[in-house]
Length: 339
Picture 1 (cartoon, rainbow, N blue to C red):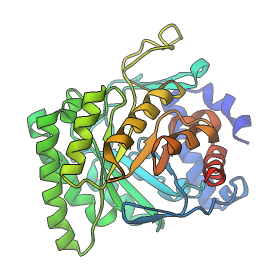
Picture 2: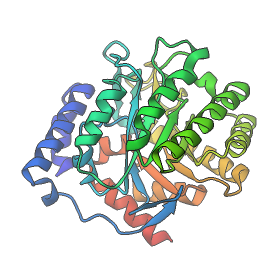
Picture 3: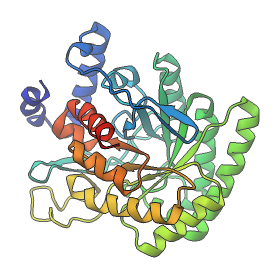
């Protein structure tokens, strides 16, 4: 059915199509018709970060920034949902247009800039949702917060989402917030992780439950950077790492329409870079903490590739723009068969 709908969606501006799709999913879920076009979820439970996931295929952050569509997205067969990225205060993000399709390469370029309604609104939406599965909440810093004060923003949001999240993802790798990727550097990352871990321990005592922390990193890292990040993740006993975010590289798409737009490139063009980072991370981490693999999954074999590289779970977003909801079941089935 999605293949019939896709030409109409692709005739719209990408951001308009995004909102139209979420609205349609919510409406179909409320009417009870979504289940008629979605296959039964794949049963393939995995225990990762101390959590039991019904299957290892999740939705990456970015599709549902404010937690407006949790129940409808969960009905698509995902083993877990990650919402956000959310910031302490609402912000409009970068000027439009800021989202571009590269259909010849099955890619997407975005420079959204953490547009969201703020963490308080997201928490309200989570409270209203009926979903009882694994829910990750992805947090970032406001654009006007100085980079030297970034930890303050992460701590504010961590405190507010802690009671409502199955795990919390720390986004330090979006290329669309000025200087954010500096937080992946040795001293900056060391200091940030120390503060987050200390706060996690306080919140665990306060709420009587332990909520894992996962750090989301970029694909544009060299071998030494990956090695240093892995060492710091182990040092601070971080619970997981999400690899990877979008890339600044334009290799292979630079001559396509919109190929030179600024922002992060996702979809098929980032697949190999993402998998290479996962493979090296796995070698450096020695199984001490799990990897959630994301980047360029457009078919079942891509998901299996991520798992074979060392991922314990996978996520998708851009692939659904080109393949629709059937991709969820396809990937979950392929992973189960490859065990």
